[in-house]
Each structure stands twice: as structure tokens, then as C-alpha cells.
Length: 362
Picture (tube, rainbow, N blue to C red):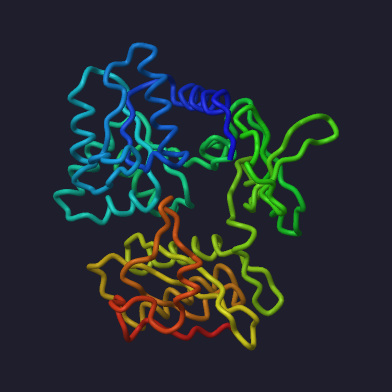
């Protein structure tokens, strides 16, 4: 990937403009990836305009790239940031880290949330943000900004569903539900790949001379004109000849889980081979460690999902797992889930007797 300095700096300046100006950044992400690197870049630009101690690191960086995230280390980093000279404090997290904060021991959680509430803004990207988790964060006074972007766009370029000024977003190949492939244009685009890719994602120039990046993500426009990212094109599940978008099912699972158990949950919806359906819609759920789940509650959750999405998109199997596999970027490793399934997805499944729960799709 070739990303010019001009694109990275344009992106960093656009972020500061959106947030209301430069400030002190706490880095809690790996800096060899674009999200963490751009934290360093924004801190550098903040230092150039006179903000002292513009970067605070969460945990040690022994090799210059690895940032060790833990709730206690984030607390220490935020406390250190607020002890320095007055300046807006910004933080960038992935949803997995935010989930860990809300599921920490109560004393640690309350201290972390009190510090997070003092941050000018908390950028959350790299994966879908659970609406229930976001609502909980807002109730605790956290100013979350959901971001969308990737290395090819120098990091986040759509904030809270709205493209940054100078960024254009459009949807290609719309289906009957208004869902299409996300394409992006703007000065933050990378130059391209070191090796030409034979398939998307790729860059192309339209007839009017505009250069576009075609992502592998699907999205739609909400009624209020905001971009909703539905998921990856290659994650779409084809079950019984019907296309099911995992992200929409995940949102339904998260909502139903919160209604029944009053707690946030991490979930991945995947398609597993099935002789009847082609692919079987399967929900893999990582509950909070303290939650006790009964078959009756699983049935309630299933019924709520079915009410919202109908029988075809309702998971035919619900699996409970103690820890979802994660990529270094903070995203759930769906390929690992598919490769390791069935039988148990981990040797220490949260409730072995509930790791496979048949759900009626008829």
C-alpha cells in the first residue's frame, strides 16, 4: 500500500477540524496500523501548533508499534493526560476495547468511565459499534464518534455517518433494499497497491476525472442521510437462496440480548455449510463472564430476533463462547470461527450444554 504523506496529513487536519481543533492524544491502538499511526500523526501536528506533551501512550511500546491495552493501563494513561497542561484530550478505540471497559470490575469501570467522560471526544472505529453499547456510553457522558475508513482512505473519513468535508461517498450496484457497495473519493485516498490487485478493493477514475476507491463493504443511506455500514461483501450469507447481511442480524441479536438480560454482548454472525440451506445462519456470542443464561432466555432472544428479521435471517444455531477470536486490528476473526466450527468453538465454552441451540426457521 502506498499512502502519500499529503493524504495522511489531510486526514489528520480534517479530523482536528471536525473535533474543533488539535489536542492531546492518548494512543491505545497498535501504531503499525493506520488507526494507531494516525493518532501519532495527529499528535505530531498538535505539537507543531504548540500543544505540549501531545501524545500519551497506553502501556509500554517496547518495539515502537505494540501498544498493550488493559483497562488499568488506559486509566493510568488518561490520568496522566489530564495531569498535564490544559488541552483537549482525545482517544481512539476499537469497539472491543470499549466493551472491555464496560465489563471491567465495578470499581475499575467507574474510574475509567469518569476519566473517559472528561475526554473531548472518543473515536471508535475498526468494526461495527453495538448500538446498545453506544447508548450506554452516552448515558455515562462519553462523547463517542463512530468512524469509518481503512488504510486505503488514510483512516477514518466518515464520522457518525457523515463524510468529512472534501470526502465523497456513493453506493454502487444497489439492491432492492437500497444496499450497495461503498465507494469513496477525496484527497485522503492512497496512491494504490504495491502489487496490482486482480479483484476489489481497487481504485478507478470515472469519466469526469474523479478518482474513486471501491471498497469491499456494503452500506445504505439512513432516512436522515447518514451512511450505515452493513458489513463486508464477502461476509454475506446465502441461506436458502436468500442473502442475509450478518451485521443486521448482529444488531438484532445485541438488541434482543439487552432486552432479555440487560447487558451488552459481543456477537459474530457467520454462515456455516448446511446441506439443506446451503449456509446456516449461526450466532456466536461472547457473554459477560458473570451472566448466567438459561435455555428459556435463549428462546426469548430467538423469538425477538424472529419478530424483527423474520424466520430466514433468524440464527438456526446460537453458540456461546468464552472469548471471540480477534484480529490485531480489533475486529472479530470470522474466518477462525468458521474454520473451528462445529464442534465446540473453545475448550472452555461459557456454557457447554448451550454451545449448540437449535432454532426453528420455519
